[in-house]
Image 1 (cartoon, rainbow, N blue to C red):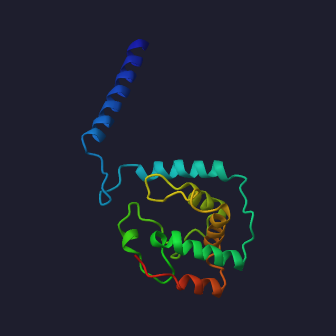
Image 2 (cartoon, rainbow, N blue to C red; image 1 turned 135 degrees about the horizontal axis):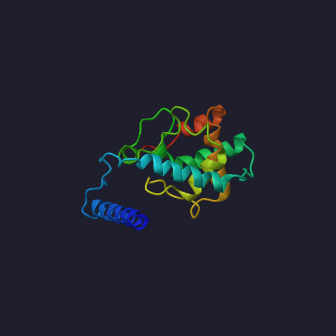
Length: 174
């Protein structure tokens, strides 16, 4: 009786694996940007991402102060590397951002990432996020630049006028 139960469970698992394999291998899985999400896709992706970030940033602290000098430097880096996807205050979403799936968050609308600790934004900018279009910048930006952008975004609701003017002077959108 117990052997039959184990055999039944094993056969169900094998059948499930084969079914999932054929779902993907035969082109039934949604892969185009315009396709709807797979069931539970967002839930599992966020669960994995949040667990990894929590583990990696538990003791991570910014080595630079959240001050005007660093906000201005962060604004310059943001305009050069982030704005095309994540937006500029007072501007519409770019064509690149409109064509991405999942859509990149527009960081100057709503709360953006002001409710996230700077260490979380730093981790995302440094490492990127798989299957979202978010690249990792660890090989292209210095740690100081990554922290400057992270501090800017964490404090975007409190930045001085000089930083707002710098962001508004962003180059033409793509």
